[in-house]
Each structure stands twice: as C-alpha cells, then as structure tokens.
Amino acid sequence: MRLLVLAAALGAAVPAVALAAAPAPSVQRGHEVFDRWCAPCHAPGPGHPGTQSLEAKYKGSKPGALEQRTDLTTELTRFYVRTGVSIMPFFRKTEVSDADLAALGAYIARPRP
Ligand code: HEC
Image (cartoon, rainbow, N blue to C red; front, top):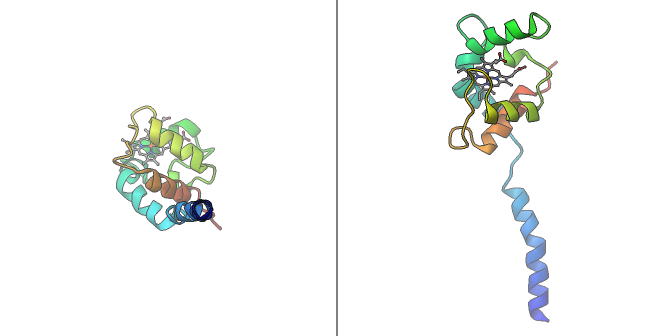
C-alpha cells in the first residue's frame, strides 16, 4: 500500500518536471540564432544569396528578406532548416538544436505591428 502511494506521487511529479524542462521559445534567442546562421544569406540588401533568390522567386509579391516576412510559420521554418533547399544547406541538431530552432521559428513568426 505504501508503495502504491509512492508510485502515485511519482506519477504526478514527472509531468511537472517535464514541463519545467521545456521553457517557452525565446524570441530574443531566436534573433541571435538568426544572426549567426541565417543572416549571411538572408539579411536584407545585395550580397545575400537567400534574399536575392527569394526576390527572384516571389517577384515582389513577398519581401526577399526573411525577417520582413509575415507568412512563415514555425513549422515552415523548421522544415526548411532541417531539409535545406537549393543552395541552402540543412542544419544539423549539433549546429541548430531543437530548442534553438523553436526559438528561431518564434523569432521569424513573431507578431509585428
Ligand atoms: C548558404 C546560404 C543560406 C543559408 C546559410 C541559409 N539559407 Fe535559407 N535559403 C537560401 C536560399 C538560396 C533560399 C532560396 C531557395 C529558392 O530559391 O527556393 C533559401 C530559402 C529559405 C526558406 C524558404 C522561403 C520560401 O518562401 O521559399 C526559408 C524558410 C529559409 N531559407 C530559412 C533559413 C533559415 C531560418 C536559415 C538559418 C538557420 C537559413 N535559411 C540559412 C540560402 C541560405
């Protein structure tokens, strides 16, 4: 009987620990990840192959610079970052961890005025 009570107490404690271990993705951290891994190709202006490719792809219907896009969900960002496209490499978890990728997605999808 005492064992049962202990098991029930443990069962209730585990989800609380799991929740505490996964903090909400931080937009600030996402900005840092973007600057390190994405800005060389996706910053605004000339000399950024990602920005120029997306300008050519969308022909003015969407901004070329990713940080000015308002239609990129965290799911889409995750897909492109883990898969790559054209000359964009995919990024390994040792480069952009799952937590950093969640933050990056939150940064790109952040609500804007
Ligand atoms: C080596 C340059 C390079 C790097 C680094 C890079 N990208 Fe890209 N990315 C590109 C290019 C080029 C394209 C456009 C491919 C095409 O023409 O469809 C692209 C496309 C994308 C798209 C698709 C957008 C669309 O509407 O089709 C997303 C999202 C994206 N990149 C996110 C990222 C993120 C986030 C990072 C940082 C983790 C990153 N990229 C790093 C070059 C890069």
